[in-house]
Length: 217
Ligand code: SIN
Ligand code: FE2
Image (cartoon, rainbow, N blue to C red):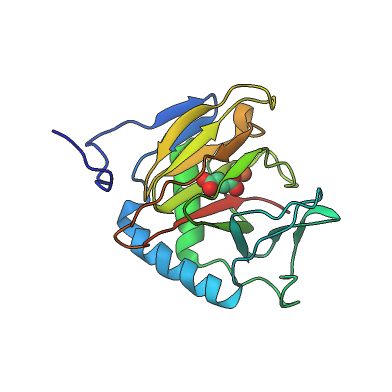
């Protein structure tokens, strides 16, 4: 049986795929609620529009970013930080939708990290051709909590490496509804997204939306 690019149905009883110790890929975990997640993300983005942040080195990021939750990740010429307010509006970030927090809690538990209560959700919006270079998520106050990352829309190639920048990353295919969870021995693994291939996703069109949940405070 052949599967088309947009056949997002997880294979029956597919076990979680192990990316590395402490890192799992839960294929299709969010598929049942993907539509609700997309709607909630659109509501957040209407209030706090994705923007292209500048890195401390002065480079403008190609991925559009925004946040919801108590804390939001931002980058500027002065560094990376978590901020309670959206620097564009000066007001608190939109609250984290209940469907976001519930999904993150369930996915983390499924991957062996019980009791995950994210206080930050970074929303990344990728257009065709955009990429996220290899990096570590290391600005969070609580590194004992995992990262939960939900893919929506166009498929992407997830690069997942080791603790050193020069560790050669493996390439994993992420589709709409897939959830990756990494913590423990993999919490500081280098990761990124290869340049997004063009396509037309049935519910999101020419874009990929990624929700990344963290315990930042
Ligand atoms: C991230 O590392 O912040 C996002 C990864 C992704 O888009 O899947
Ligand atoms: Fe990241």
